[in-house]
Length: 192
Image 1 (cartoon, rainbow, N blue to C red):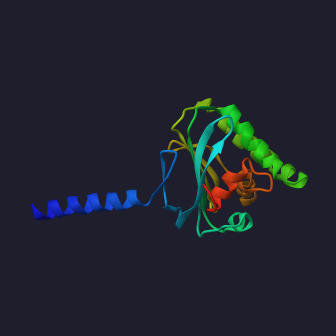
Image 2: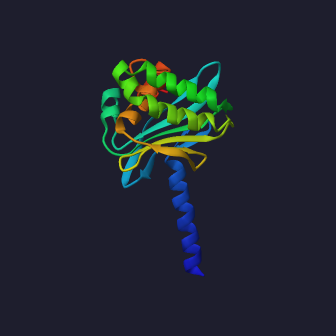
């Protein structure tokens, strides 16, 4: 009986410790640390995408803190972009915005090299149709697999090869022409 009570208290304490280490952004919880593949990642920063109102909350996870976009882009090992939708979004609209962000932050040579992989991601996201508010969209970089898209915990589409693709994806938010400057600063841990 005592062991069961002790185990219950330990479980509650562990749960409370985990809650204490979650980052809250617009009511969405992002863990401050997580394991991806065989790596420990920490939340580098968070922010909110606002365009005609708040669209989504997001967090960037890296192996080590990086306050500079170049350092974040150059970080080796697994990485994660976690997005929680504040409003419904059509898959075609989201795919178009991501494709535009990649193209706005890539040279002509990079665009040519990425073209088929951008189309692969775009086709996968467009096929989802409407993605409801509260949904989780995760882009993981796993060096042994590539870019993995997960919606509400379920992998979607095929893995997209090449670290150059994931770097281009990160530049949507961290590039020279980011979708939103204050969101870039937030993801770099500078402001929210």
